[in-house]
Structure formats: C-alpha cells, structure tokens
Image (cartoon, rainbow, N blue to C red; front, side, top):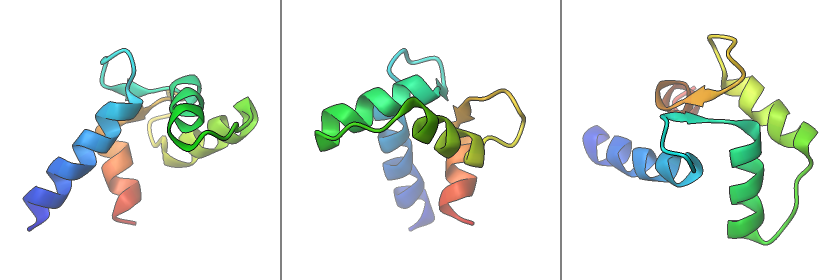
Length: 72
C-alpha cells in the first residue's frame, strides 16, 4: 500500500515541479496553487511552506523532503 501512496505523492509533487528539475521552488508552488485552486497566495506564504519542508537549506523542496513532510 505504501508504494501506491508514494507513487501518488510523486505525481502530486511532479505537478508542482514545473520545470521538471526534481525541486519545487516557492515560485513554482505559488504558481500551481494559483492555477489549481484559483486563489492567490503571496510569495511570502509560498516561501514559508517550502521552507517548512526544506531540510537541507537550499530553499527548495525535493520529493524526499515533500514525502517526509507528508509522513511527519
């Protein structure tokens, strides 16, 4: 079951990774939220979310960081 959930999580992550580099930036997150939810979030809100999941300090969210956040 975990493999199925992880595969689904990867698909969600990939939707946010607009340039396909394996990292989600605050700007990518903000842009996708705007497109999917039709609501705007500020750059600061997007940065706060990415920073809250960023464990290596690169100010981006990798899939591993995203997955760890989902399982916290």
